[in-house]
Amino acid sequence: MYLLYNGQRIAKKKTHVKKRTLNPVFNESFVFEVPAAPNAALDHVSLELLVLDWDRVTKNEVIGRLELGAAAAGGARHHWREVQAAPRRQIADWHKLKE
Image (cartoon, rainbow, N blue to C red; front, side, top):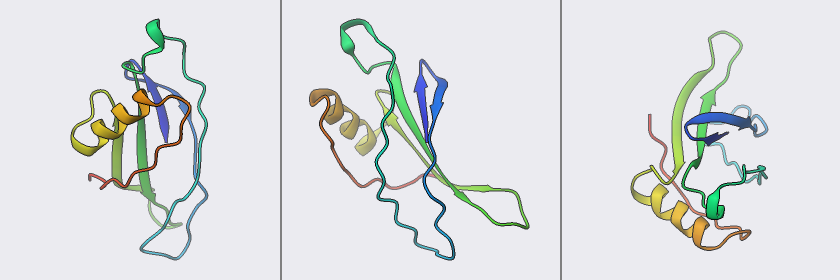
């Protein structure tokens, strides 16, 4: 998971590795320090989530990705607007990953 500010990666967090499963479930929370912005808006901030297939033989392969932010589309954009409307509140949602 990357925190992006104006399109540049400024922070990175990782989940625990889920071994020996084709259907991993990630139920983890993360806290990021967000740069101060005019009017405390999150318009220039986004989150990029990558799901990787890790194994010892081949290179880590990206099997899905999701971007949450003002520039996102569909449900990801709606989720981001909910986050902006309710600062400091946890808002959970399901998203389909893109290849």
